[in-house]
Length: 152
Image 1 (spheres, rainbow, N blue to C red):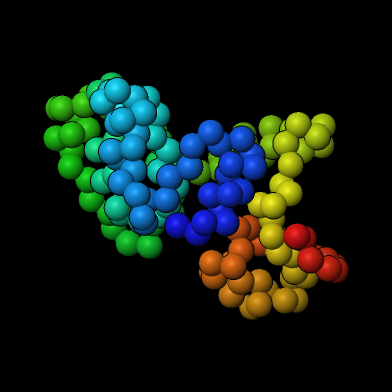
Image 2: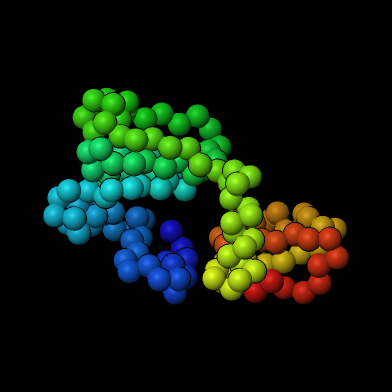
């Protein structure tokens, strides 16, 4: 976890941020909820440990939303999902219905990409853009025809 990204989350209104690399996220959430667990867990790390962590952290009858793209096959303990916790599992990954809502919110100034889109490149600079996107130096990278300058 990159500390600057946690700071960005706080800037966007997160009351609590947890660095799972240095803190026991499951214990913190259990403590915050009196041992109950979280109502909703959104997995967006793309790492198998995020799935395991979520299954441990979420409450019985909670909702698990999978938003990641994994680089390889990922397994889960289905006895937790179906038997012990009876979870509501949802898949979500930028369906076409999301774009009009996001564009509307950005257009009306009700949402911003400031701080999230950290780098911008013209399409001709795609190799550099992809290298930056794959580094920990960026949050999101914008590529656009004719783009000039940095998005940050």
